[in-house]
Length: 355
Ligand code: NAI
Ligand code: MG
Image 1 (cartoon, rainbow, N blue to C red):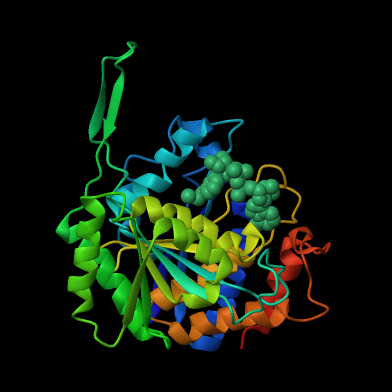
Image 2: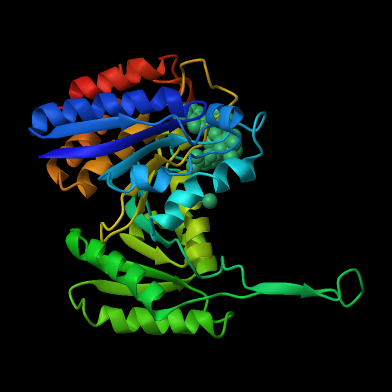
């Protein structure tokens, strides 16, 4: 088989780490015996914006929709384009139009990466945050009245649909079922948010009936956030609404060390549309152009993408190679990992470790 991938490096260090992701992908394809058809696009970048006055061509949807996946770097160059324009004009369009209703972030301690959680070692921390990515607290329903007076009042509604809630829960339960620990934790706040969150809990209970093999528990979001730090070993798959998931999906990776190693995926599980794989970090203007960005987040994205493409062995091999290299005493380390290696030094070492 040959997988068709749209490659969109974007801005800043996106252009430096994406080639290292592609280097790992090429190595994995060679040993895994599958083909890759890569097509690179220059849109979703400040350069494209400065030339065309928009982030994307008008026919971007038609041009991207038939790819098997999108391999994305980072977008944003605040000196040239305001951040809300670059983000809304590109990434958020992809997420919406391609109905990428799952945001998935692994939280896993890597060898050789200092964690802010004292005393934790790789193996203690290995879970997935599954965030609902299309509805919930981030609706645009609401309004403002009595503007400019003492009675000024704003209201913004939370929207939860049965379809929207059930589909994210099913995705999370399926993930949990396929993992050795078969455990699912739901983020709630039904003690304080008295209509939508009890509904979320009710749907968790209902969907859980179809997964008797998965152990299910729930925590209110406040203590859940505390437990990410205090007891990260308790978690396997954590599912959350849009707002709670947004917070947890930054807190989780922060617990595992440098932002440079964290990957994320925006997934359309039905594969009606391509899913998008991008590191958690942005374009890092402060270090862009120096060739010192950590490529591990992007390479880990390659691993997640391979798994999504139906190449789980190749995906696991890329992650194994990352851990193998970072665990070596003489590993090339980029400055954020305490060394002085370049992006390419680390990327080449990982690609060479892929068997
Ligand atoms: P950022 O993630 O780009 O950088 C934050 C800090 O982390 C910086 O000090 C940077 O040098 C460091 N860092 C980030 N990635 C690194 C890597 N791979 N290796 C070593 N150090 C790394 O976030 P910031 O500065 O808030 O945003 C910069 C631009 O990126 C903005 O335009 C923002 O909108 C955009 N952005 C885009 C995202 C995306 O494409 N999904 C996500 C986050 C920000
Ligand atoms: Mg966020």
